[in-house]
Length: 553
Image (cartoon, rainbow, N blue to C red; front, top):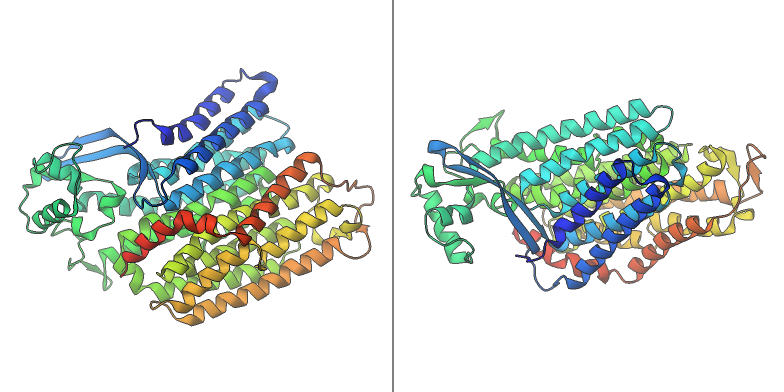
């Protein structure tokens, strides 16, 4: 337990900054205040990285405070804690969140009106995302998960393009449906599962604050299985670690692994697994739950597209890794081939759609859908190399998709046009921009030496070596890399090479400004560094990946 609430600060800093800006008292200092708040949070995240113990596989810097206590009478007591912690999965994601948020905020010069509302909502969105990645309690996670819908809805709906109302409403409805699926399962889990630690304290087996070793856990789980504990003394909670162990499920519950309850020949745990999976698949998004994403990207302003692709989509993969698969390991393994097939289909479908796009922003949006399919193949392999590849791919995609959307923004800011046929030979006028665009495109198509290669390689390696899925899904996924090379190289040749041409020759195609240069090249250099030295990420996520794989052995 951390004596200093450093993880709470990571949430409170942008939250307080959001309130400060929303008050309207910052005058002309609105953007500078937002940049300062984001930089302060990023500095604190860097500090967390340096004090993180990579040899410790459990949650670190944990904070826990009593939040909700509800007496259920003969059914025991219900308890919810404000519980935060960080491990090998969440550390990489909060680093990505802090960095991409900072990049998005400093590149918000395209926003000209309602600055107080805009920067306030961006910081509020950041606080919600960080809260999701740090929550150790499922209800707390759900609160942050739901809350971040509102800032994104307004950011698209107010500062978006001509069809912003349609895009923001579609985003909200899709993600709200996914949230309802998660809520249904969450309620069932809260009723069915027992918190062994809190129950042990309540019956006097251990004292509050005392370490709970394996023997103590086994003893309380045996008592639960043998129904030796009076129901009035049982403590129910949404503790994610408690919900990850089926031995904590009460006998007689429909979610118990040995329950005879079935619906259409499938158990309650089977249906619960798929509800959770789809709930997070919508957020990723996975085909066929993806149709909200291209519209949201096309209508969102560039910095919001950066946050959406770079950070928000990762919550879908995070939900699978933290909640869905650990809660229902047997069901996940039984459906491993279906999951891998969905990932492979998403890769191919997204790539084929990208090939057909003439709108550069839509092309990048479908590219995102395609590349996130590798994440599911890696996870569904249920081996260390696949899971490591999936985590790496999530982080790499966050960097590269942000770079690609900033690249689109550079062109759109100068022309108000995103049609690929409207430009040709930009290398003659914008050499610095062409170089970083080449880095972004070659990294995204999986060229060795860039981060994109590492994530895709290990995700597919996991698919090829997995004992749970057929290698054919990895082969199909590999074909998606070929399609990716097709649409990305075609785009690069069309826009940057050849004789200089603009649909409107009055457009001023100036090369990158200093701000654009720093923003784009920092992302490009980061992709190269991770491609050359991937151990920076693997070292962070190794302990989590190994613990995750053990669940399915």
